[in-house]
Image 1 (tube, rainbow, N blue to C red):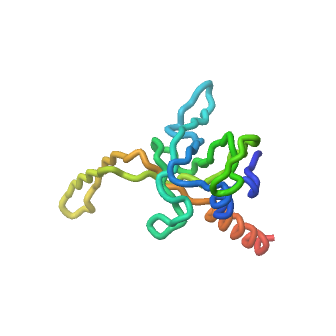
Image 2: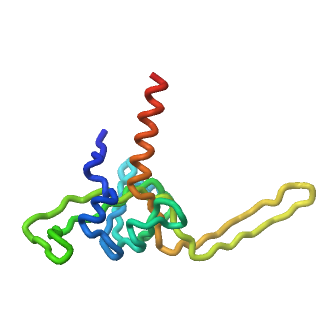
Length: 163
């Protein structure tokens, strides 16, 4: 089983040092729609860009928005900052001699709906039944890596009590 080491996480320090901002390219890797080929689920890569300021919270939570096609089954997909054929030396100077490695920006939490229709069927003396139709706005909500680090730390604490 492979894992992504914490050194490859796009922490707030990394976001600041690499000048990560709105419009930077990302890649979402996942297994949406349970697409199967040859008896196995196949991973799907989709591109996109960062849509909201990566260091700021969205709706008061450590989340950012990405502009990428989000479809059913995208939740839990890792989001990576893509390779850059340059690295920043300072705010006004870049170097083209080094390719930075991809870093984990976060994990897809869900998608932003554009519109939603809810149909309620009421039957006397029973709870109503609801049918919901949602059209996504092609924007994803991504939990930043701080939430992943916090979850890992909490798991380590819990493990101490279990053992």
